[in-house]
Amino acid sequence: MGLAEDLLLALDKKRPRPRAFRPNPYLEGNFAPVRRESDASSLEVLRGEVPRDLRGTLYRMSPGPRFEPPNPDLYHWFDGDGMIDAFVIEDGRVSHKNRWVRTEKLALEERAGRALFGGIRDLALSTTIEGWLALGFSGTELVTLQAQALLGKGPSEEQFERILRAVDRSNTSIQRMAGRLLSLVEGSPAHEIDPVTLATKGRFDFGGALRSGKGGMVAHPKIEPGTETIYTFGYWGGRGGLTYHVFEKDGAVRLSRDIEAPFPAMMHDFSVTETRAVFYHLPAVLHMDDMKSPNTVRWQPSRGARLGVVLRDDPAAPVRWYEIPPCYVFHPMNAFDDGNAVVLDIVRYPRLPLFDPGGETMNPHIEEYPPGALVRLRLDLDTGRISETILDDAPCEFPVVDPRFATRRHRYGWVAARIAPTCGRGIMNAIGRVDFETGEVRYRNLGRSTYTNEALFVPRTEAAPEGDGYLITTVYHADEDTSDLLILDATNPDAEPVAVVRARQRVPFGFHGTWVPASGG
Image (cartoon, rainbow, N blue to C red):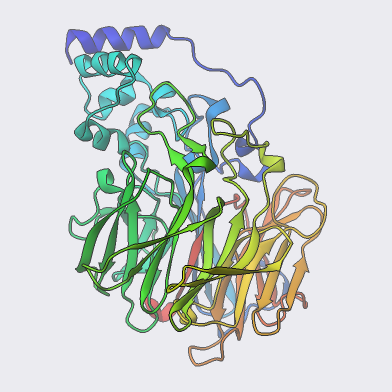
């Protein structure tokens, strides 16, 4: 290490460390991390019976910092290190274990024994000199970067690639695909996970097809039923656009193409039908080159909103853009073709939630963020006309369908929802079943102080009719600070639970998971 690096480290040690000036809701209650890995060979069944025909593993992903964040005030829910909870169900019994995803970022921090890197709002502000040096920056480079920031200039493309290594927390989703169990976060390649031990085997980038500088891949690939073809994309941080990928069942590259867009935007998810891919390019505008501001994602509705539609398997097909009113979509439920139209079932927000200041209008605090509504859009591809149906006015999120009907016309869907006042220590306190044929929405109200994560649908058998199966989720009881594994009848979620299983430790509020049948290996 040279003289410049030694000097910067010495100065960094004298720099005042940020202190929390107000409670951060993402570090409290069930948002707070569980900072230990554990194993429980047998969990107690509190109610009902675990079905003996239900055999497999529920994998859930939640974000939780391994170490105290360098700036607690600017810590965001999306910043935590990936923590996998695995519930193994077999012969009416349930076991549980949890492990962190060992990313390069986490390995560097575990070696140092403390947090080195800021997050989505404070990467440039809170990352320590030790952290920058660990990413391969020299002292001279750091001084130059600081000088460039004062002039409004960002890092080079190669430097940006190095910086993105600290952003890869692999904390959003976990999926079985390409013959592997993969943990995912938008903006980076995947990490391969041992399905039994949960050990991290290392990065997986589909043979070099995924590059962080080209957006990596989002955490929501679409897996076509039957063929297991993988559709995914990564959006660009420095300029407007995305790279769209199609991978074979074994992970081989079938198609990769770049698609330009008017401005860089946070594009969390997308939709796929049997013939088309649909991209949500909405005014959650990225400002990754602004090293002086913590507001890297800003709501700017004056930039416009649009849907991009392209034939999903044609590498040369033109992309058609359709203007829509400004809104934000984190998660679609499903999509399908309807003649020369596409039907999109989405959770739509009137504006970007979860990111507070920095845009054209201020966002309320997390406790008051704008609710998302389940909406069906029908886009006529000939005329560009969009019709919409609001399916229910209850705030909801984490929409899912029977995975055997993904990309196809479906009748049933399920959501996490909020249908009554809560104690304020969580967000969603209900699980809803939507019948798109009758329009009926039925909810299971979990109570004032019990909150759910995403509920996954598991078919009763592979040949069972659509919607005939189980819903599996974890729920948190705020008054007792405990978590349960909840198994419901998917056809009647408000009936008596099939089984309630007590977890030995709290399962934090997280994002997404997957069910892998025992025969899935």
